[in-house]
Image (cartoon, rainbow, N blue to C red; front, top):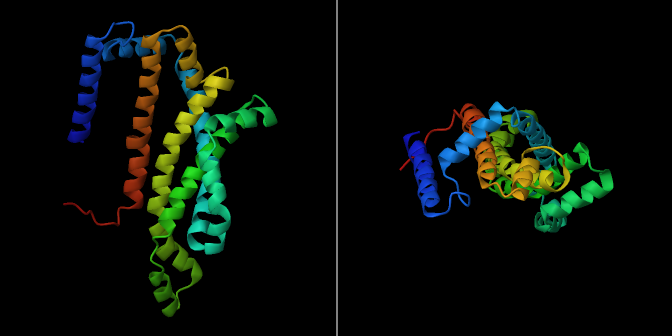
Length: 247
């Protein structure tokens, strides 16, 4: 915890030093950005847009996991599926998120459904690749040993396969969250009348760097809270059985 706080303090100090070396309107310091964010919160302009973005992020992440996890696991355990799907996963990975957004908006319309679908489709290939590589490292000798001892399929799934796959599922969840958040902000910027991305673009058009940094600081704080306050705690509970390894 101490190292994390020191790292954050170092980043803030670097930001402050850079702000001293540049014009105030070009790069406001951390104090100015924080005060600006506080004023926006006091005016009630932040939470509604943040809530909308979080709902889109949650929906998009759920869709991405729903698509990416089964595909990644299937490719990892079945060579035929790997040969059929690997090229399409790579194609999905290389298509820019902007293309997904534009296509979804044109096919579905400028609505929430199109936004969530675009977010989910953009993030799903990255999640599938992560699971694909992870599942290939599963020790199937343990499965064979379980069969020798006549262990049932359900027990093998829960006690042998799932514990080996879950670390990669959590890693994919973390990676997917970061991707989905960035995509959501981008899509809001080009096609939605609300959300964090919309506000960022609004203040960009007004060339107000203090507001841009304030909103950037906002979703950085939110991401840290989700990571440290939710995902890390879930991971500790899920993998409490694993011994700690350190050098």
